[in-house]
Length: 176
Image (cartoon, rainbow, N blue to C red; front, side, top):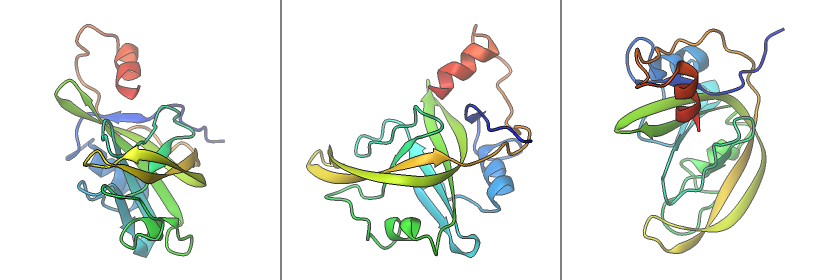
């Protein structure tokens, strides 16, 4: 029986062999656009969600790997579930059946990519949060639940050196 991964897979690059882009394509059969937070691939009924740490106008919470929270699209004004380009398709079970999640965070000046895997939407909540201009507005946060079983061995290339840390210490630090 396959086991569920207990933490995200860490990638130190986006492109090329052993990069996050290659892994996403291998696991999902889809190519993610790096510029969009919600990447929909209707032909495969798949959405790939990107969470970028410290995006002040969203309120993603990636601390609980098994139950992360992901903010819907919308940078200015109130968010809407009926927003047609990203939100409505993501929330439509007839259009999207598979939802995958990855995270981008900074490790000093270097981007680190964390593959979370496959999730189901198990709830929604709304709250007041600043938009890109700092104005108060309503945002919608999806409550996700981990659905993926082990997707095989990690293809990520780990850094050769960990700046005085053990490999375990490095992984704990970059996955926080």
